[in-house]
Image (cartoon, rainbow, N blue to C red; front, side, top):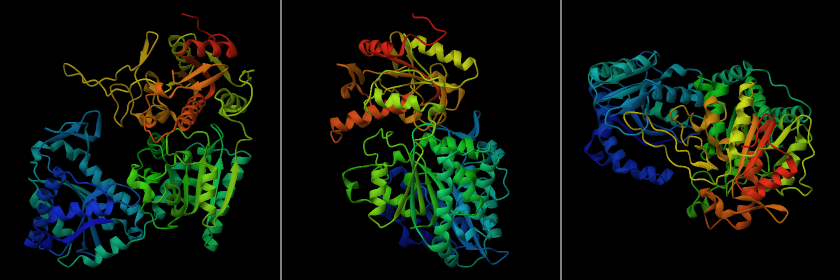
Length: 630
């Protein structure tokens, strides 16, 4: 969807002298976005430059599609030019990323990022790679390009920069369909436009572009199927295989008979929900079905993009977020695989008083595909407003007269073979009735450390043996922004989690590493993640061999049971008056359920509360093997 559409000549006419104000108004009306003054100024300074260059090339009737939002994302392309191909007479399009930078250089740590002179903040994405990614994405989703993806090209235009001040940015431009132009090469840009477009109206091409159906192209699906097929083969057992076959059959039935079915697959940690999700994504992609994978977790989605898709940008685009489907056409997909569906929120975007009239996220996801598939653990809702449960999904689907199929994986092994351990965790947290004593399990170790130093030492010993391990904690400590480095050194994390003379920082908040600490998305999988304490929002969805959990003062043992202390939580989500004490109690217990069930081989516990520590020691015994009390 584009916000503003004009020919180059029209944009330069006196009638459009206030085009930036009109564009800002359209953004507000269509998407509820308030545009900053700096963004308005960038439109006023950059868009006329492109329009002038088009007119100089004799292409005043080429259409400019301004602030075009890429399908199923919130990303926007600055300008897409639509016209007639000078050679073939067919449609031709160019995605343009505009920058007012005057000086920039490649960032040494990552050649896909650039450091911009006089611009604070983290390094920026290379504009040519950004334009290329946008073009590849559009070609992968608009059916207009199914037969002719080469009709779409990409350009980065740094119209204020001279070549000498951005010279090393050219090193990253390796694609024949991607170009980089500057103030110095403005003449070459005009020649490029003249060579690509015929001096004819572009309105018909623009119409076809904007009216194109949105669905993953066969080429994109083939890429995804190939990437998943090249990974280690997934082995599905028993109910996993049943769930997989049920979805494949439902998608085939929907394709043949215009039938819609909702499938819900429930199971605790370690039951293979994500294995099923990826297996379905690979199989349905291979069959040419329009399929997408979505989650509500940035960390989980980014890890899927890295671990499954790698550097294949086309395959990365198959992995989306739940809030990507607010504008999706009804039943446009054959299947939508919603992994970690317990993270479904009430509404997409920021919840507020104005969100009450908006469509529920559950309904958006159900509408998006003929077979929406929800894979969830009903006891992993850890934020207020999360609505991903079997009863709620069933209620919403059945209210529309839709068939709901449910498969439970809970009779299978869990947590690397220990169903018994997860059952104990549920009883320990009061989420299931029964005694709290741990009677042991041959395939899973549980112990209590005498101090956080012991906990860390025990986990380091497991790392030395080639196992994976992480430390997590309840959200009971402040979470500071990184400290600025002194004497030219880079920023560093603040050791906020302080317990009995032991301290460690939380995981990185953002998507850029800080020193040796990986970005939040990779905390669970990058070796450097062991040096930070993971919060629930980062750990959820991941599993590793050994799990260390620090119970904070928000969960303590009193009068024969564990009770929650809302006031001890530092989680901003629990500060709202809209969250009742009962809801807060449930969310804190669910948070520790998530933290306690990340380990596949064993879990080591420590509590900051003396009475709770004594209780854990009584039911679990002494410290983990290979350690000694400090």
